Length: 487
Image (cartoon, rainbow, N blue to C red; front, side):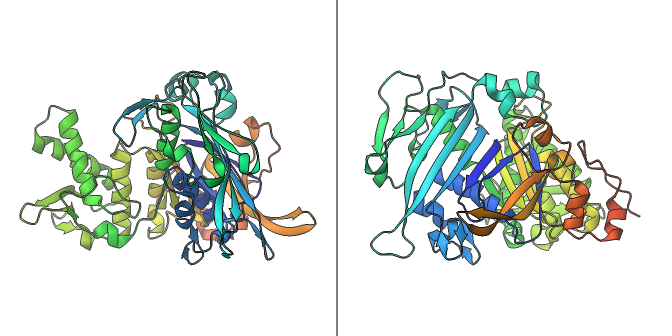
């Protein structure tokens, strides 16, 4: 779980400091920088998994994937910043496995990760390369947890189950020295037992975090696993409609691929976890999905996965109330999106951070409240302990729709707005993420925070009066989204 993110020097994110809860909606006009925040999160995720240059090239620019890595750095005029920094506070899973299948257990699950990356010119190339300037992984003590994790939660149930372990304060990864003598150290988990592994930073092609294993530093490995689990969902109708081979991956892809395989896998998980017969377990899972989907869409009676033994293929099927079966190929974009998110909600193995841009796209306006409720249900319940029925899962969405904003609880809403800044006499515009007044971000954060009213957000997005009337009278400080009566 990503609880706080500080960014400076990445695109138009300068001196940004954002706190997240289990569910967050970022509202702002197109082009203000909402997507850049998602790009920064995905860049951090890629840095935990790939070499520096590959991570940079995986980030989107205006034309798709990044071809000139300078475009990742903040730009004012014709000049680019020479470095960027990203710092994440997070709660990581307590246990997992490394790339060799070895078990790992974190000594503490509340951590702070910092990475500072510089741009360097190589062999006269215009785009240049990247250099690791600083990397650090430090514990957030249990005593400081209440100061760090400010979103509403139950300390005796949720926090006690999510934030575990202890550490003397010694880092897991640290940086020493300057220039060509800069050294990055990977420390043993024992807090002093054994010499740290020291690596010269100048020639490092990737972060030290991305190289960790269970034997050397299990806590750093779990930070790596947490960051690798962060993903940006971009559900594509073509991918959602496609049948799967029986050997296809069993997790829903970021583009919505493997929907049928993921649903089929849920039925197999039920068989494994219960004493039900195969067919009975599958029926139970499909009924769960159908019942959930029926809350969102009227014409749903049954959901199954058709297994073609001859072709060894899997196809998701939805049967309407009139008894007519429809394959995924013939379902609407909105139905497919609802189905994908319903599968994601029921998959207790799917943990981590889910980013989703403009979830209202392709959804009938009458169904937007149901969509938002589903997204909130995908996120963990911070009133209950973390466990199989309440995985450590988080959802961040963005939107420019006043219809969506009007329905988001104030505690879950941030406003992205462009502001003018001055650096060394040079003026430029950057993005700020402001919470609503009288919500937990303002009440519990001791730093100076710019707050806005929900009315200002709606005015900023130029809402249509009829939409306000349709979706008005909604909770603005907390609680669930109220579905209006639509007749």
